[in-house]
Image 1: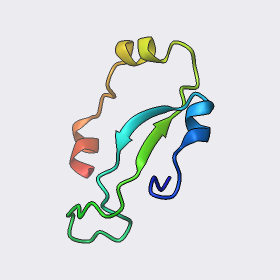
Image 2: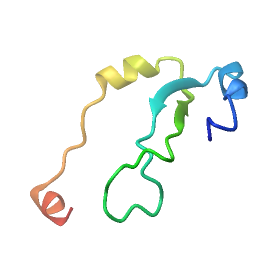
Image 3: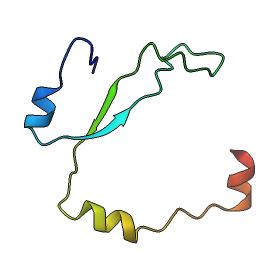
Length: 71
C-alpha cells in the first residue's frame, strides 16, 4: 500500500495489524541498496486465534547438510 496516497483506514478497520515499514528497495534493486523512495507499510492478518502461542511453540525447520549446501 502506498501510504503517500492512502491512509490504510480500511485495513485498520478490518483488524489488520501494522508491522512496520519496508526498506524501500523496490523490485528492480540490482545493487542491494535501499534508497528509501518506495517505503510502504506492512499489514498482516492472523488466520487463527492462538497465533502468538503457535509462533512461540514452533520449532525451526531442520535441514540436512545436503540441503544447506544447496542453498
